[in-house]
Length: 524
Image (cartoon, rainbow, N blue to C red; front, side, top):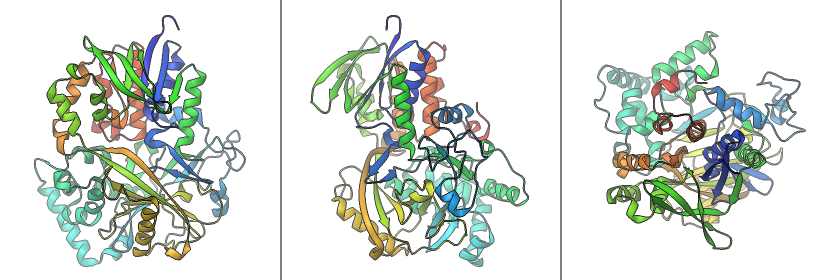
């Protein structure tokens, strides 16, 4: 290892493992990864329960970056033969490559999936993003559709300026009527506070360039047979995506194996609990073995952090952090996440599209825009991959509840959460409780960095982090930014390049997924 740059990576999620692979593959870095969990993937992990699997949060493998897409394909090749549900529906979503693996015979494979996401509102399904199709107009009724159109045109002519909140952001792009019908309830479930109290930054991260005009343009071009390459289509409008046979965790487990084969050392159940700063740089990390309780110290030349910013600053030795930085970091907000996995013999909701398998609806997930229930989103795991369900019969669902660690819902026993989930599915007419066959619950901490409260002062924290010469924050929690998985990977790739001598400043990391033209143009 003489002459190699020593780098400690905190976290084995998408960003951490991408950095580990990039650095280890260069042959110029001595890489050590510490992960507090017992598996790879972070918030993109796959939870295994019996013979079934849960994708925490749902992860479409789609990117406008060729570099990221090819990175995925090097780990898992794209299918070259139909998957189980492709056979059942007599469909081919992919361009067959004779050299590609057969999902029915091989496990290391990326499936090509059809994207269908809809909104459940008022007991009816609406396309997401909302379009003024005949079905949408029929569901809304003429009078309400007219009000929505008038409200939209009003805000196009007289936008709210400046945009002070997420509510302003949505209203300017969709109009007040459409916002209240299709955005407000779900978004407030996610964050637990009114949209008027949330900074508009989250909208820029998640909705990006999407608008009513853009959605209509996409629909018209589709109707006229004018196609565009997937990377040129707004992310929320993509119709196909790649997906590992056994969920996102499968790819990240493969990435961990590749990094290890290249020489990286990955330690699970090891948590970084302290960082010693000297002369404007991190000298060493204090690491706790969560199995034995032993704490040890490791020095390194560089540190890549994917840990939540709040925990990162907390871990730094006190005297090195200005009081205002520590105070702001401690006050940063996060939303946590509970998934109730429910296995049904059959569901009550009927497929009104003709595109689903027997006994299914076609959606990968459904936004629950119904204020009378707590669940915010519903996943149909069979549609992500038929192999997640573990068996060909039955419907494997994931009900997503947004909450905060330690609140009343988070503290409920698993069986009580499962009962609430089943009752809510019955309440919205999706499934009868009598058809429920099995259930489990998975919890995830700090899945959503908050864009409210102390976030207004986040530049104070970022400014300090940027002064730490050998510290590189990457990924969603590492940057307190609602990055998609591919954006998190790109931040890690950029950090690796800087460590290996690209000459760029850390500003290049922060610039990823911050400019609108990234979303509108091809990246390679």
